[in-house]
Image (cartoon, rainbow, N blue to C red; front, side):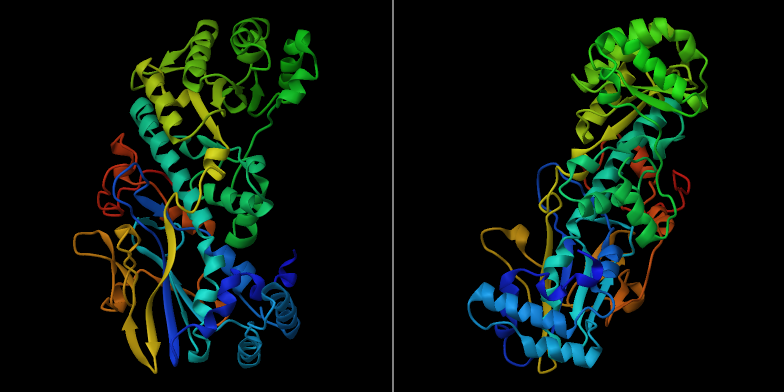
Length: 498
């Protein structure tokens, strides 16, 4: 669907069509907020990366989004859908006439890329015209889809923390960290838009991807001409099309066709261990050794137990090509040879693989990772317990803090009143409820008002906001303990500007 064909009146849950009839008489303001709720107990991500709102606002909510044609389309649709007249044709026409089809809504949000502890407000929504109080929660459905880019960006950053800790411990530096996790997730997601949103969310933390829609989104909506990079790489079809007896010729073809620059070759079509020992390590050994660090061969195992297979492969390559010791005393393959593990990768397996490599005396410098479904698809709105709730209303101009407090699940209790986000005197980020926050301390920024984008962020700015800090690299306990004063040590930034 082209952007001009998108109908905001149809972009909500069916039941919300009837909600304008349900609020108390004389309500003139509805104020709601979005958060990633914090649940007690269990392994969880304790902090989130805020990302993706700018895309949703630009593509779906900004400008003249209500027209007579769209009102009539919605009127006919909902008449058929409900089999009765419940659509607020008059209300939408007033929006169109009074605001030229622009939404009289204000959204305040955390700057994109900021790292915020779970349980805090991330953005607020309120109507700016008392006649359109029902608009605030009408657009909840679309805005709650923010759960997806936030969750992907947060998981991607967790990968980065794990990789950084092992890389620093085994090499003494973080050189190449931005390329250590490659996005293989395009084919594993549910739609082109998921690929774009998830792919762009990963690019907040890394510069390595094969998910083209994510690059295009970063280009179009976040001002980054080229946010990520890839290298020539084989897939099984380009290897097995030579036949089993000609696997060596298939590998050699890759070396011939891509003599300069890195090249990745999947090598498990038949027997990964024999391929490494007898083809790469024997028949093509001289060809491999002719390559340089800038034109390295990246061998890709793609089956079996990830840790066991990778350790066996690296031992075979050591036997064939030798290794050296780095400044930290860990083994490193020759610079013209590296490995990428892209099968069976998630947060736990990466940590496990790197831990086992470290125990065997190997530096994390030797290995890159590719991740697909665990990065972009094996997650849902409950991964971070994302929720959008009303916390304040005004009736006849008189304000009232409102909330929910289910007796059966205290974790679903909601916040009260107007909210602000601040860093307290101890340096911790916290949400201030009941409208008592000081405006000068509020971290929430007005990003949308009456149909206009008020604040934009480039991917470069977002990446700066999401950078790792000292505390992210020192401990090997990745994001499973209580947060330790996030953003307290801004002066000690570990990784450089992308």
